[in-house]
Length: 417
Image (tube, rainbow, N blue to C red):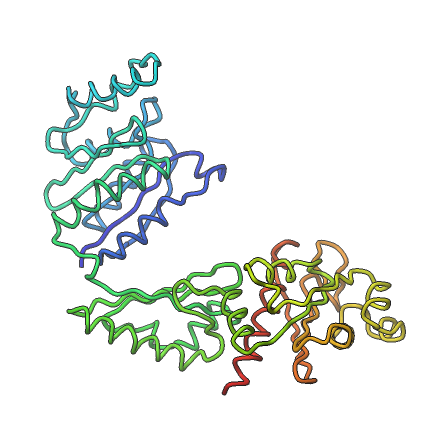
């Protein structure tokens, strides 16, 4: 199997002032071509670091793709390092020199002499045109190894990939976007280590496929890539693995590929012609906001109560003062009282209540920051879920709202079983 290694350059990436989206984009596109990404690394604008990354990448893979460092300044070093690693020399390419000059003339700006650096390439290289900037890319194949240089700005890099690089890769390596089949199975609930145990040999000893777990905002995405010969066999094998994963994970699986938790939950509500109302304390209306993010939400969403204070819980939801004094606002008992009061007032099919401690203050040893109770009332049966969430305040609130959505989904889906 063809292997690739990705290098992203730029000190701004290391400082965190810019997010590296290029390597994610390239990983996804290369995988679609059936190229296995062996690894990726981010390095600053340092000649030694860039060269070491290139040398390591070429030891591990057949193809090295680097984004960034193609500008005219002194810290744009990737082309120089690529030439050294591949033992070749860059020379001025007159056609490229004229193109750079024309770029500045068209915009009525003087061209700094340093920009001529962008018109220098090894004679062996294929020059990748940049329709959105001044920095051309480079495709340099030598001694069974390939180095590809792409610009750093994402809009330039993606355009160059689609129009210049991908056609070359397909032609040179006889690739096809149908060389492998892909699927993402989306899970909510278990953590990565728990999922690994549940999946067992499916992830530990894959046969003819790759499987990888990616954590995304409380969800785990299970990426599967199959390499069977023939499209029909690939699809059959992918369906077989998917069935095995679903059998092991059950209701933890909420969707496939483009599905998201909100759409799946809302679709389930609409299909069953159910209405829902929410009572929120620590999430401050976030769940209601999420439920109304989709157009047409009035078909299923009655409304919500933001009962942040104890007084609001008493006056708007009928939670008793005795209950609050005996158990506290953050308790199973309070969550149940909130949701029962909510459904009594709204008359909806389902009610959801959330109460907890989002932090950073307000926690105790008995009730730490991140403790959240979620109560869902359906057909007069109350399901209460206790979760202990990590992260900062915004993360705890978001995870609490998503946990509530997932609880609703599970209750409705379990009704079918």
